Image (cartoon, rainbow, N blue to C red):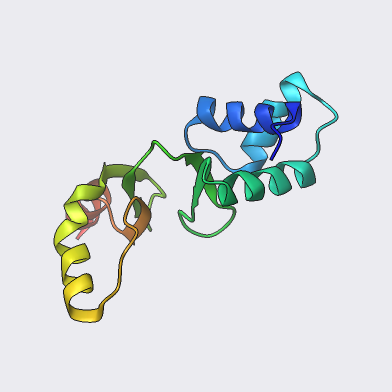
Length: 129
């Protein structure tokens, strides 16, 4: 697979932004190449994902977030405020082992999103009671 200038621009944008939606990546690419459209961005991200150069994570409703493969962590996404925290994927090793032993399932916990409520939102809720 040949690395075209447009593909390189998309990959560079993902690296620079660290975590970004296709729309954010498109805006970044269009700073250098204004004629690149969102359809090209989606196709390129899909190809780069299949090649293992980028990874995507669904952080909630809406478009996925893309990052480079070197980023390996779990996202904690708050239902209340929408905040996103990152924790090391190694924290899920006990679950990975349990799923492997019990179900024969190999969990890819290298780039995952878990939904819940963050500490700040829980504290605010308790204070308002």
